[in-house]
Amino acid sequence: MNCPICGYNKYRYVYYTEWDWGTVEQHGYCEQCGYTVEQAYSKIIDGFTPPTRRGWRDRFGKYHEKNIRKQKRMKRKYNIKYGNKDWMLRFI
Image 1 (cartoon, rainbow, N blue to C red):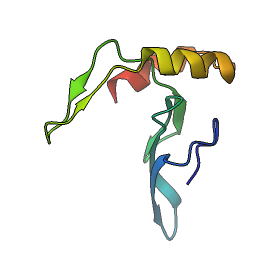
Image 2: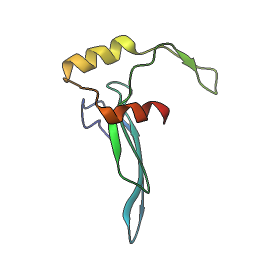
Image 3: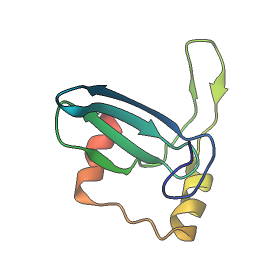
């Protein structure tokens, strides 16, 4: 699936449906522009995660470098504005 903002082809997106409710959970994240979608039996929270300030190591020992320059470039290219609800995406 492609990212709805930048069109990146490795957009990670998972959704769960129930037959009488429709879509009840959805989780999505784009590594290129930082667009995030979160929903778990509630309203949809979508927006852009702030850039990470330092790298991190995952559970398999692979190091992921910081993404400040990449996300600043995407912010300029796609005219991304951070809103009031984006602060919640930092803690998800």
